Length: 174
Image (tube, rainbow, N blue to C red):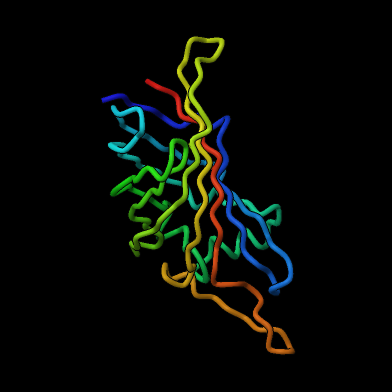
């Protein structure tokens, strides 16, 4: 079984949430870890684990980040880490896959499905074999206990329930 670890310097874990239903706010986790074990070239036997430090959340706004870390959202003090563990990966074409797994946020675990695009395999100038992937999916934040909500004076929603996940991942063969 080949083991791959995430190259954190060349990976991004981003999310987007609609604000006031007219614009998107982008956020990211800056501290994370992931491993993948696979033998097959089509990754159909891959086992993937991922975790992120909730306190590393960044939306380029200190006040909003503090609110996201509070009990209204992630409750980083009580639940400092979010986890993902794959349960299956199904090839859709040569470079596209459907990754299914269990995502745990605030000790609530739900099944999520992510679309995966394989960007390729290369040996870098240092002799390391690297794999590139783009992942995308959607979750409902309220499914994970991130239930804070507010409405505008006109009855509009401040923060959407839908969160779009966008990950650019580079893995290094160990």
